[in-house]
Length: 189
Image (tube, rainbow, N blue to C red; front, side, top):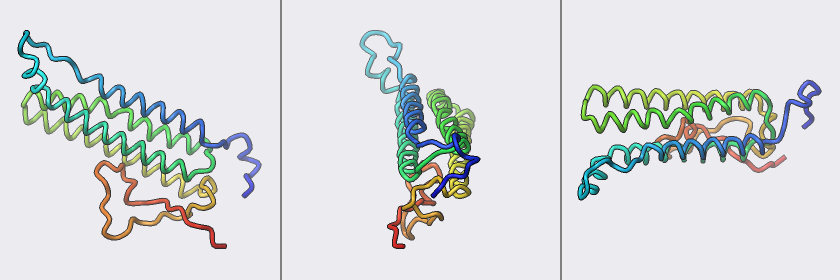
């Protein structure tokens, strides 16, 4: 497939976008672990101090898993893209921006759970959900852009989204991508 002359110089392979994205994901995961701290307790109370910080561990595990699912979806998606243009780079940056916000609500949820205030806990979880919704919107924009620009996809990739097989259950935190799958199909032409 030939690239229109107007696109010369604006399209590239995906290797730099993937490398940049992987670096961002690595930074995000590193930021998540920074909230795990040694408790400030008197000698002999380390075990109880560590156990009192259980919300930090749960928040870290949940957000690490969420970022891992986003990374896996990102990797699978870019394996189906043959080239990127400026628009795809922008929607990719929106996905990365939304993902990079996750460490902040993670800390907010962790702190709210440790303070035992129900109102603050509800606000913290709603804030986390809001960032999740933003990330979902970013993925929807990403796939919408690919649907409008199918020439960016590899030849063996279906040009229309197919829905997940009936009976399949999307994984939690799948960033809205498991309900739509860009399937690789064999060329039978």
